Image (cartoon, rainbow, N blue to C red):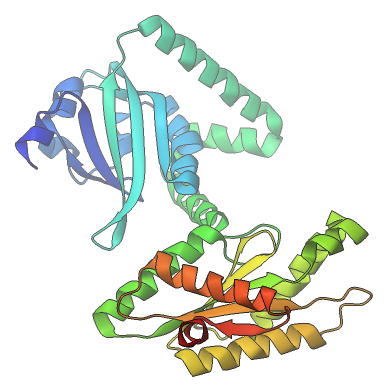
Length: 327
């Protein structure tokens, strides 16, 4: 660890997704009166009281998994004498060296009265959780008494939260966050291994009129049915996601311009010919294929410009960005 970070005026540590300490600076070691070899490779909860372990699992883990960061969380570590050391904790979850790492900084709390008030508020919130359901209460009680046994169960809960964080709740498709991560992955594969891919941006034609005429519940039903149809058509290697509103995106792996147009036409025609009951549903599609000069943003912008061309050209059609350049 570089000396500036090791002696920074705030504590620093990094942990794996499972909570194992991967690095810690001297400032934090001095704060809690520990030696470096006492903590490296150990679980971060080894320097916490039982109450703070429950707090860490109840708030820190779910929040960092869902949102990727935690800001200004009041917390306590245990020093060698088993005394609480109150701190203010900030954390961020990011990908490094092929794995998710949680980097955290801590500052000792000087205003103990304010800290104790926050702890009291936290205990009140925990008590409300205890009262929510008998199952939740029993689970939390077992966490106090059988923490080691329940550790694996809580890890599984965190995995489920990660799945929820990548899923659009209305349609069941992958969400915008997941799509952006996969775009970065495919772009990396293209630059490293020349694996070509294409992107489709799809928009439901006149969707506002469906909402205005039949109401938003029917609009939501159309979105859900379209998502099911798209999944039934897509290949296993492709990524189908809801980008927002009535807009969907599809990453076509190992797919060049001609194949992308063919696949997009298949999507368009099957949506247009599907049985939508009394509703008339069609989609407009813009396509783009990766090139050496492209970034994530430029590929999406080209596909979006092609979508606009499909919309202004009469809707219910496919346009590839390459055709816009050739005009």
